[in-house]
Image (tube, rainbow, N blue to C red; front, side):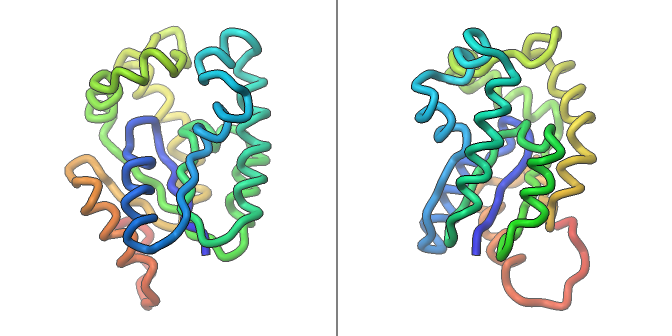
Length: 182
């Protein structure tokens, strides 16, 4: 089985993914790290030197490749859901559960601002240039797509990464629960 983690930048996908991989003795893959590895440059440079479209092409390619493997925790980039083909790939992936790590936009903005690597390696995605308005705008735009492909939604606004990982493990256990929001 693969566990996919989706959500906006700063939602904790990579941190939670590494915790899950350790606890569940599974492999861990981060799609953004794989894109950077393949391109030989950081994401901001891909955007600047090539275009967002080129980045999205790489993102789709990496997603397809990662979904070919099994027994992995996969942290997907926040914008992977923008392309319909990626949403279809996520929804039709066999033996996979997808967890949407949702978070309050103000908390996301605080986390992003506190991460020094983000400013250096991640591009602004709108004319709001990384301001809270950008987070609110893009999160609002992507929210229906995250929910379209998810199996479960976890609000991580007030939870530590270890708590989110524990909740995911709990949700992976067989149960009669129909509630997708945890």
